[in-house]
Length: 151
Image (cartoon, rainbow, N blue to C red; front, side, top):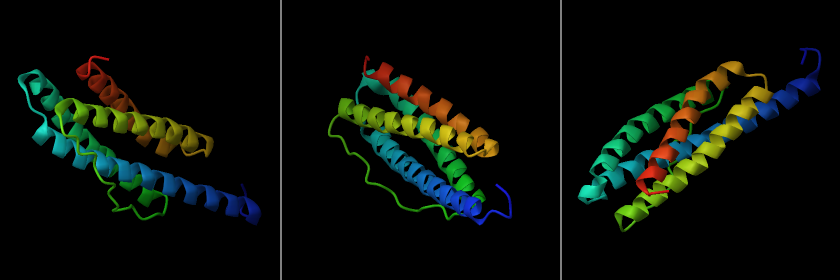
C-alpha cells in the first residue's frame, strides 16, 4: 500500500473495519463468558465438581483479561469497543452448565484461530502477538472442560 493509491487505502480501511467488527464480536463472547462463568460458579454443585469450580474461577479471571485485551485492540485500530453482552446459557444442572461452557470456549477457540490468521494476513504482527495468549488460554479452557466432562 502507498499513500498515492486510494484504492489500497480504501481496501485497508474496509479490512480494518471488518477486523474491528470481528474483534468486537469476540469481545461480546468474552462478556458472555464472564457472565456465564459467574452464573455457573455460583450454581454448579456437588463434591465431584469442587476442583472444577475452582478452575472455573481461574477461567473467569482470564476471561476478564481477554476482554481487556480485545477492547484495547479495538481501540488501537481506531474502533470503539462494544458493550453488548450476549445472553448467557443458563443450564439447569451442573453437567449442562459445563457443557454450555465447553461449547462457548470451543466457539471462542475457533474465532481466535481465525483472528490470529486474519491479523497475520493483514500484516498486523503487534495485534497477532496480543491475541496469541488468548488463543493459548482458550485452548487450555477447552481441555479443562473436556476433562471435567470426561471427554
